[in-house]
Image (cartoon, rainbow, N blue to C red):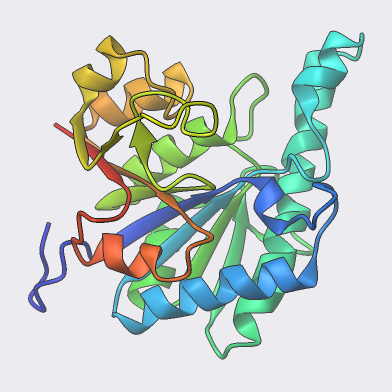
Length: 242
């Protein structure tokens, strides 16, 4: 939806993978990556948009591979939820150093370091101009952080989910393997399903479809693409909506 300033979106949820915080090795937390993410968030914040963030924990821990090696799946997934809180705290620090208020909320309660996730409180924080980082997945095992992003976006009445990737949109085939692929500027939910395009896991995508939650897929590492896409520029990213 457009607000009074003509912006296509007023409240966004940014979905980041844990690997977005990792360095070249793909593991751990790189302060330079955190600073880059914070700068992109600041640019969106400067447009007057309200920002929530859901971040994964794959740079620190992955529950599913551990479960395949024999670990109890619930235990492995709970460890992954804790990893997302560590990432959230690192991102909080990076954004706060740019002069923006931030609150970390988590579905796995850790009252000494973060607020418990409370939907109305998260909305109130955003209305007061704070960025809200939503960690801990949905608080239950067997669900991905994509599912958490889809659920939280619906709960806080976000206008759009921005899925940050390394690819500048959704393509007809893997652009890393095929040079003749086509980038879609816009797709319907059913088109994504019919073409078997990988945007989110099935649970997350179905939740977005049922709640008519738009998704923008873009290359987060092209510095200007996030702002361009949120201002309605169709030359970057792919918009998926009803």
